[in-house]
Length: 209
Ligand code: DX5
Ligand code: ZN
Image (tube, rainbow, N blue to C red):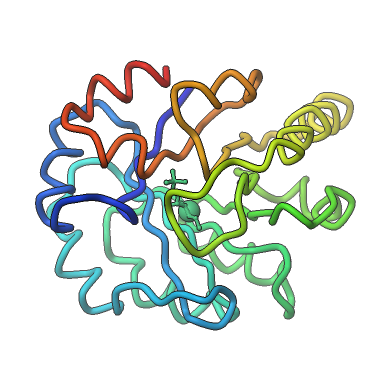
């Protein structure tokens, strides 16, 4: 199981948090980008992100919690990015955006909010590399995992196996050393506050694994 560490909720500065993540064997750094529209919270500006992440070691797993992802993709594409994830709930041509991100050479993910049914993401499953199952309503770190969201792991696993799809399932929100037991079968987890509010990041990552 891969681990992507989110820097959204930490008791240190972003610079210090990133330095500490860089010393671990985390697979990715999860960056939550917010526009104060799709979610009720705003994140760093693109300029601040570029400055902060220009020397990070782990590739970035960029979670765009925004209504218009394309301009963020364009602004951040020169960083060390593994994937861009955007919400299935936004309006606009999602297939076109998936193709656009693929043509730039990145992996593409779609996220699915707690109240959104798997049937809504189903038409896109054959095209994406990642499905990000949201365990909380997006926007803030440190929220408790909503248990019903974990059923989507089974649904998406089933759809993947009967259709031979290739996406990985990632889970974001409320992941810690006890809720990890609800996530059997998941390929990757995002963890923010559990890892970054602790002292020993590596030990917390090991416990999740
Ligand atoms: C939630 C974000 C998450 C958040 C996770 O809106 O998408 O990535 O940082 O934080 P924790 O692990 O504290 O729930
Ligand atoms: Zn996230």
